Image (cartoon, rainbow over all chains, first blue to last red):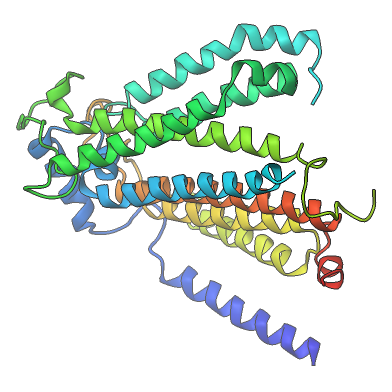
Length: 90
Length: 157
Length: 115
């Protein structure tokens, strides 16, 4: 029972890996990337941003970065709550 | 944690300030070189690890107070949110300071990047506060064994 | 040149982390496996966005080359790294609490000692 389960899971995971491997494009040739070319063309002309990655992080996808900063804040708050609960009641 | 040897303390005295200067450079030049708020904040936060590893806990807490970093983190997040809200008539995080220069490559003055540079500084402060506070809290958490209220402190000691 | 070798390396890294995630008993080793899994996903994202012969997506430093690497996967990776860092810090502080409470890091021991 355990061995057949192991073989079945190995076959499923190997099939998934093989499918992903055959479906991705060859390395170094992503084909036609319309969105990225639009960002590369327009980031300097519209907003005069030199660094396109920073322009994407803080300007085009700024709401994503706000959520990311909130996740960091929440993690630090929960670490503080976890460790301070033990210290105060002594 | 006991303080480490004299070699480590001397190395910390020499090199730990370069960490802050290098991190500040990464944060400030985030809009036209690789880097930004997150990476520079992580570099600056290694300073706290340096101090804690070299000087030990007792001397460390005479210099470093946790509420300063808590305030730094909160102020960074609030400034980021405020700057993002300022562009709200157009869209959230709209870059309202930047001036368009079509077809021209300019240097690093403020209208060439707009709110990106200001947001980099705000996020840098937030990451400095968050990572330093994580290190401080986890160090204090390893020393709360004597004052732990649960009663059971491990069965192998 | 190297062809699709880099995807094979990424698949190998992901398989190592999956096997370690299932078979290991120590919690710290499980956390290391989770970190390697996240790192391999980041690696895959960056490798997907590479154009052969491209430069950095910065106008200030690009030189004469106009072909640039895709910037969007790098943006996603930047987000994912910070979130993985926050998750790892929270996981390790939870492990400190578990060790304080149970005195062991073995998951079977922890389940047996409960209650």
